Amino acid sequence: MKKLKFLQIHKFYTPYLNHFYQNHPKLINESFNTQINTLLSDGFSGIHLFSPYMKKLNYDTQFVVVNNIHSQQKWLSENNCSSINPRDPNYIYTTTKYQIEKFQPDILYITIPTSFDSKFIRTLSWKPSLIIGWRAASIPETTDWSEFDILLSSLSKLCDVAMKLGAKNVEHFFPGFPIHIHDIVKHIFPVYDVGFTGTWSEAQHLRRNYLLNHIAENAKADSFPFSCGFYLSGQLDRLTSEVAKHHLGSRFGLSMYQSIRSARMIFDARATHYLINSYGKPVIDLAESETANMRMFEVTGCGTFLLTEHFENLKNFFKIGKEIETFHNEKDLIDKIRYYLEYPEQRENIARKGKERCLKQYSMENRAIEFDRIIRKYLVSKTDSLSSISINNATELRNNAQTFIYK
Image (cartoon, rainbow, N blue to C red; front, side, top):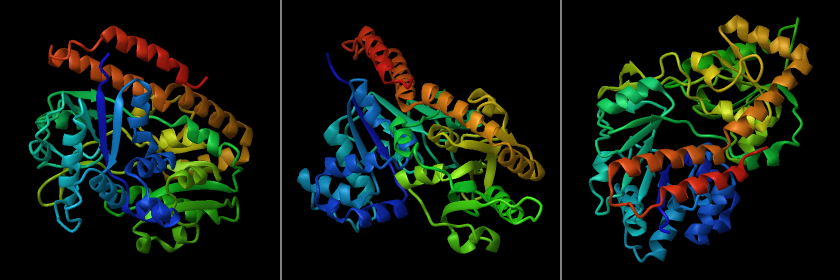
């Protein structure tokens, strides 16, 4: 039976890649596959990386980190394409183009579809059967998705905008949590009362920054002091003096998940997501009254109590007050922090139930099964040329994959 080829192209934070290779200097000389597998095992961006899980569903898979010059240079060398100059401004696109044409995927999954939009797709000599993108963040209004068969998003308004930008179809979708991460970090004992791990950015996180500062200011109150552990990256030179007192350094990959376990509760508030015009100004709110913050899976999956800003669609994922807790304003935020520090049994019960829901329902294995369902649905409806793919076989694979689900 023919295996479908699945290629995911993704981008990692440059500070993470620099930090990772500083800690693994010999990895630069290893093969492309060794470098990619070592990166995957570190868990960075793990909630988005479907390639390993699609492999369990009998896909032939490949994963590319487009801005990792070390693994990309090794791939070029191994495939006799080493003449490409890394200083060429089109280096990333040219290398990725060669990788797609070499692998010839049936399914091309692009998790950076604003950088690699239809203008890039039209340069390819190989046309995949399905081109799929994922987005739950801001979008330039000049983005062209007319070559995309499906655009996935967890934001309803973004799905509407995706169609206007040319996407042929949209599907509501969200990533999940890698279960093996829980097993790695579950023994870590918390040392701080309130924690946060993420980016400090004035462009996307003004309200979150404000709330972090509000937490830091209230942490020193004589009536009810509490400890904070913030692990921040981004515009660190713009931290407020109060937040800077609690900043413990940037954390990525497995260290990020370990930092989540270092606190009794994790604060969360989402970024802003807009359609951005050519002048850099926001013109459409892509999130409106929804959140697409993947931190809700990272925190609950690690077994830590999540206190997040209230949005209506959160109830579609977790039972509020039972599996996670939310706050509505600044006063409610501090009141909830103090309440759940004073009543640890309630906090720990919510954290346990949130973990159980996440690991059972939102595991990456489960989300890969849903991804496979979407792929098969559109392959069947798009063309008869792939009739050799057995839909019954796909169903059997999905059923077999249930053995991977956390119990």
